[in-house]
Length: 306
Ligand code: GLU
Image (cartoon, rainbow, N blue to C red):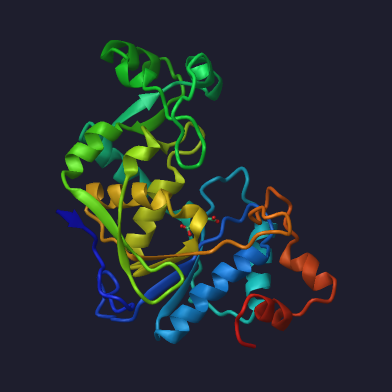
């Protein structure tokens, strides 16, 4: 049996806990840099789909990494989105205000024996795998965790925790997939109107980190908890997060959260075919604006009406 929560095409699901039948969309940038044209595409797709389906459009700042997120980037997000002609519901949602919700989701998984503390540094992991040819990699290219801390004797675990050693919390993937107990799927619309079921393959991620050493949560936990609490019916985001959806679908099943419909859109690429990103120094919207590019130029270039 496979289970995907939303299989009917077209956004009609009910927002969680409300009598409101409107579909709910969200744009969820991280305020750790300026928005570029790839973000503009994602924001506009969310916004236009919400409009087209008489839906709600939420803005959620994914600011769990307090060291990297800055108020000036946040202010720039508001400015850039308003410049593009977008409006969103107030209040703006902030993940940094939801740490306690993420903590209770993590505690719940931990109580069920699905998480274990991991003391390894990146360096230690790379040492373990360095001698092995073709060590398996996750869909983002990171090495699959070799499981070192999964095998730590309980007393040693306790001793290291009691001595104040920092630990991340990893999902015991084998256990978690067993506990979810059925083949999971999600309903994927891509850029189109037709949904298809995609089999979730969370095991491709190995024992993923769900609470980081430096932050008491992770992108994966925060996004599934928020999408559920905020009644998101349709997640519209770039294809770079397509594979992460397998893990999200598993977490939704374990935490008994509803699964939204997913619309993973194509990514904008630069002339060399590289995905636009903050790290590849894609030109920011504010830099384009300073060069005299207008919001309508951007909308036209991205294929939206003006
Ligand atoms: N915060 C993520 C990003 O800026 C988006 C996450 C999502 O849409 O699920 O790439």
